[in-house]
Length: 112
Length: 115
Image 1 (cartoon, each protein chain N blue to C red):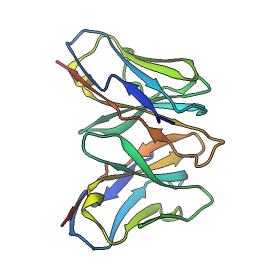
Image 2 (cartoon, rainbow over the protein chains, first blue to last red):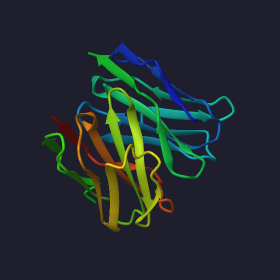
Image 3 (cartoon, each protein chain N blue to C red):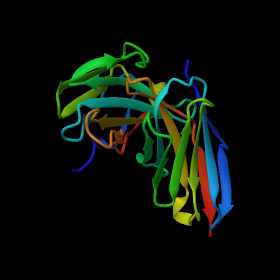
Image 4 (tube, one colour):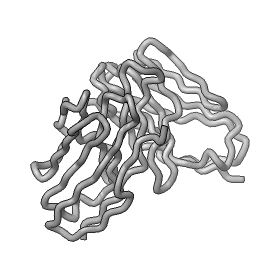
């Protein structure tokens, strides 16, 4: 059974720091990997999707990479801002079935 | 596009009552997903549809849960009878396999409280 683990569970950093969020999965049969952001009491906002043929994706200050061989993905946030404070979730798409398996999330606090 | 629309946003009901959650996917998307989020179990996929047909309902917890998609623009998730342990946030999401950027887009969720 596929399991997705996110480390750390919580992170507090001062504004301006570069940071890395980690996501690992037990089964390398990940098809795509998607990173989401969730603000308290809100829905999920898609940040980046790494397709099966890709190794990384970039959007603004965000960069996500995927290494299927090691079963890991990382989300890099450059020059963090207080507005980046949220919970970040990674989710693996299993094979081509479109079933998303979610990690438990990393709760990020960026202090002014 | 208005995005994925869910209603109601909040629902409070008593144990034993029937609850119906509604979802309107993004126009043109042919996949629709229902998820449940709780503190204990995180986000779980309940069921998903492709072209209005249920493909995988293995995540539906019990027979008390049922989902339908009568057309491409509407889906319901029904719980009958509801129990306190069903209290959670229920999300609907949609996607298009053939359409970039291929991502799943989530609605704002319905927060269900069963007393």
